[in-house]
Image (cartoon, rainbow, N blue to C red; front, side):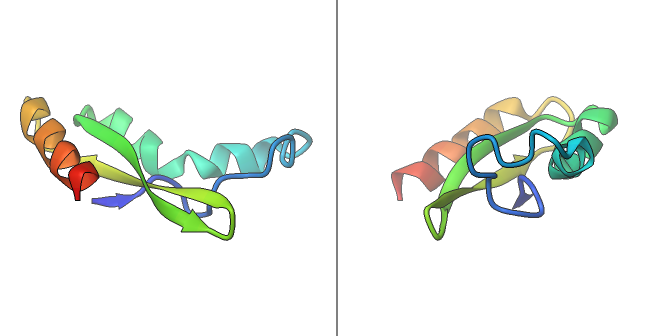
Amino acid sequence: MTPVSPTPAFKLGEKLVDPLSMYLADIYMAAVNLAGLPAISIPCGKVGNLPVGLQIIGKPFEEEKIMEVAKIYERN
């Protein structure tokens, strides 16, 4: 489990003029995609009024396991 991004979500329209910030916000997800690992992102709370995401990463071909973990997390 890791955060989805290094910061909470941007406010609507906040980073449109700063593409580097937008790219860096996806850095945790990009590494997982490049490694070819299954992952799911789910909401896990808020900082201020901005949502924070949790990324659950599994071993290759363990999609069912990460879906089950996400389901259990969201129920509780």
